[in-house]
Length: 317
Image (cartoon, rainbow, N blue to C red):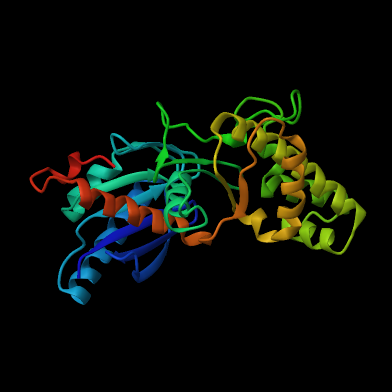
């Protein structure tokens, strides 16, 4: 059975799968990333995990994977297959595509984790059928993936979609990026957690607790939540003014609040648009499997475009 290896590398854990030609997840596995052991150890863990997946394919299906796709955090040079920088993993300029291709002996695609998750949401998830979409996961920070006709735009330097660093409150809270008032300092899950912990006096309280308090009508929670929603709407309207997406997909931990988030967010965006066409605003559909599914799509795309005589390490995603 022809299949591909899909790997989604996170700061603490890795999700992986063997994916069939029809997109079915044939086999799933997880590993601890082990970032506390240093960047070299993380890379070796990734290579070893990929080799285990290859061996499982041989044992179970009688043949090795035909290609592999891997999604990683940080700054990624998709074209040259380089994991440029990841603060959480401590690596710099790792030729990850070439290393994996050498270990596996097959073409490898390397992608940015959010763009790869966005690719999956756009093709087979909440954005399926939309020719233009914007995927925005609200997690520890806020990133974005710009979808155009079945692919995700990386930009000239690999920074396309960084909506979390749109300044929505000029002169506001400092951001690690060096600016003040960035969107992710007000509307990420971590920002809401911080604001709610301060408002309720419980340092252990988080965004999920805030959402529950909003649902129960707590006025302090409603205030904290609405401030986050207003900031998010300001950032999203800037993005949709520039990109004109047909579908706006919201994911990440904050989106798990469901209509507690989506109803006021749709209202806030609607109040802000003037000449712009209002996109559909929908929750992400694939959850934490998006990155892995997207990595599988990258790998399958390689099979559709690769010359069989090409050196696997030279193949671009």
